[in-house]
View 1 (cartoon, rainbow, N blue to C red):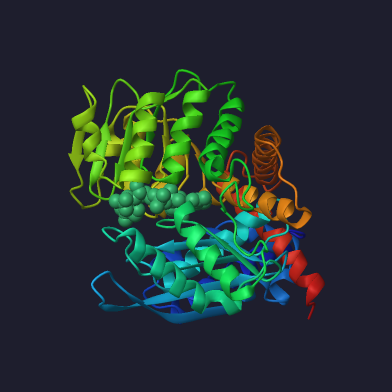
View 2: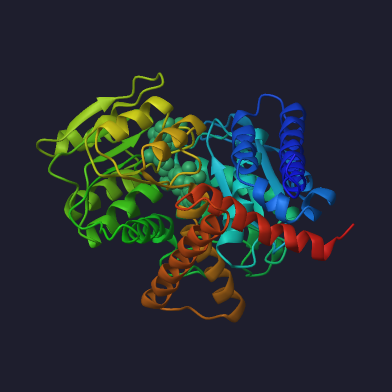
Length: 466
Ligand code: NDP
């Protein structure tokens, strides 16, 4: 054995073993929670070099503590539909970590919501919030309530019942929820209204509020805009720009709509959108007029994306087929912005993206690409931005909304947009630089995991050293 090499090798082996043990424990303690396992596995794949450099993180079991939520709150939500029938849904709040600030993360209303899904989202949120450089911990919540097909008054009654149960656990310095799938400005309004009714105080216990009642400019736009700003920074590293690029966007909700809008601002054009029924392909591009139509369709009429193909010439509609291949990702393009939901790009989809000429994937949705898909994309040299870095703009502007609320001020659109751009640039540069420092140049996954982790880990050591 060469003198001097055995110790580093031992340290690497020890770090690898430690990460394997943490992952095995997560899998054993959280059976059947595949998305949570994937999220933790992705992080463990990045942390070896950090643990070798700072074995204290292992001694003090930092990662082991971080993967166990501080609290999982579960409650029943009883509400009455328009026919007087009583319904019972399940509500949750997973408070993952408050090491660097109050718990912060969205609420999702979707039939697939359960504690495991929210653990994955809250874990990711902890790293994302750390990357924003703002003082926010990680959380996520929601309900298995399905808003689809429900009347306005049913949605309102559900939101009021949900908040009545959630109320004791949140507050401006405790835990500050926001929107996510199925929870937009309308739902935030009902939730906030009920919060105030109980609290008898107007405080920023929720973000994503309307601009006339304590919200921030650009909050609605922030996630989609932020993803595109992040993509712009990535392309700049190859002396390239978004202008003239053909882009694939999935989803047609908040994130998708404002991704398309910012792409148009920067001279690129999106040619696809989707919902859970299928996708549309518009080879002419989704221009501003068409985008406004989509916003009315989705935010006001609450219609389905297939109507787009009936409205606009040359556009085609493709119903979802299921299986592990989504033909949306076969459409030839240079950039892709998955903006619907988790696990929407399989390994086969990733191969199809590469075949179709995609050279950049920036994730608007949370963890839309399965691990195998990420490996295919990065092996093919695609610029790949994981969601915890690329979609951090939404929570960053939520942080700015909290700051404005505390000071009772409202910044202009330009001011907030300027700050958002600066934050996305900073996240990009930090992630890239961290990856380089750890001998993984251009690896945005490792860069995001390491820099997100180190800040939280150091706070944990400072607050609670062993
Ligand atoms: P919305 O509810 O506004 O839109 C979600 C879109 O995704 C809809 O078009 C919806 O279609 C589609 N979708 C949802 N679930 C599925 C599914 N299982 N299969 C296919 N399509 C689906 O949500 P957002 O735009 O706010 O969120 C989209 C993604 O972005 C999520 O992953 C969310 O966690 C993430 N995100 C959102 C942030 C925000 O600020 N809003 C911040 C950071 C991340 P349908 O109408 O048919 O359900």
